[in-house]
Length: 494
Ligand code: SF4
Image 1 (tube, rainbow, N blue to C red):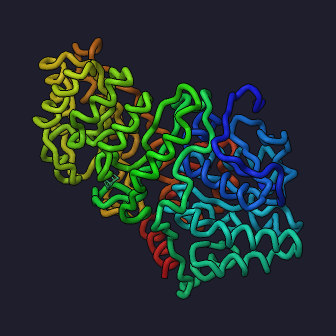
Image 2 (spheres, rainbow, N blue to C red):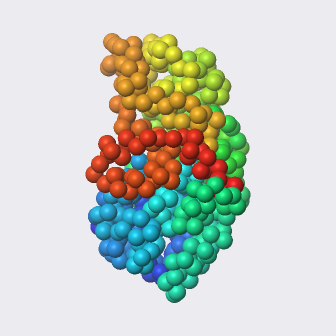
Image 3 (cartoon, rainbow, N blue to C red):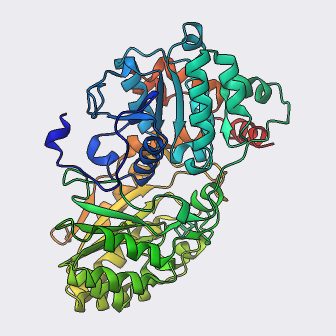
């Protein structure tokens, strides 16, 4: 992968070079990594502090984009793990780069220091316990200065024990070489916390790079909100990412003003729930005035209003994505999505008036209390949308994965064979609608990986370092003990 082919524009002036050299891995392909704002932020934060950060991806062949440096040449390696299965990619990247996987092995010969951040480190940091010298808990902005200072000190003294001690003085950093023994011996006093930036104006707030090679194309990402004030019981956001903090609309509009001369680009709104931003309408007006197309990852159906549709229509959008999650009103209410099938139909009828002719809908199967009737209700609702509105539908079906730190953390995971049985019910119920209702294939294996990696504790974390490379089956077959992992997580935060 050559940087010159990527047509990247960097939106902020950053110092060239820097020290120490620091590999920043995104353990997925470049086009996916470029859609992750957290990854943009950490690169910008390191470069601003004079660090020689360089990017590596799953498809960059163990070499950095900036200097074509091999992974093995970096004294510091950090990775942003945003989705549990990316951890397998990370292990493969490190193994391909001939990096020793266990922190203990690397400590023997002063090998590279490895640190982890990203969404999974909020949810289950124990997953990284055998690999990482440190794991950032929560928002990176809170610990970045401490990290850079500690690692610069390490480069001078080359003293691993001193580095671990120094890192552990921040409560927002989990240091497995020091903390795991305390967790296993049931001692408290570890006192880790998730760092949460309260004032979003202190973080970058927008993409660092614009590139047509990103998965969403040439898109300026704007972060509207972090955390969420709602409490949907399956969702990791409220407990792990904290209460909603919103960015001021003036800041968001000023980003648009600063960059609007950069030619044609889309504006992507990054937020758990776009409809929750108190000044969304004002922002949409500014985006329309700037003549840009807007996109949302997914829209909460009750937030779909004329203003949103007008902005989508102005950008020529003919399709939208919504997340009903369940097919029946009763099941949807149990996950605190307080909108009915009737409201969905009403909102989609309004969307049709603005030219929307296809809709992608996210559903989860395997939610607690789901019956076969609830599965058939997905088909019935979809058919009535087609019958009444003639809108083409794509159904994207996921399997409910219970995650740590959620009210549904103790609920069953239905697994692959039961998932297939329920999916077959849906297939059968949609017979005859194949031309207008498309069922996206379900990633059963990905869901299983997501489940086991969400719950692997200290013991399994060690085993997967040996098994993960080229051995998915053994790796997925390790027994999951949610109670034990929950206990270990509680001790980490005691
Ligand atoms: S599902 Fe959406 S609305 Fe519900 S808690 Fe999560 S982020 Fe908030």
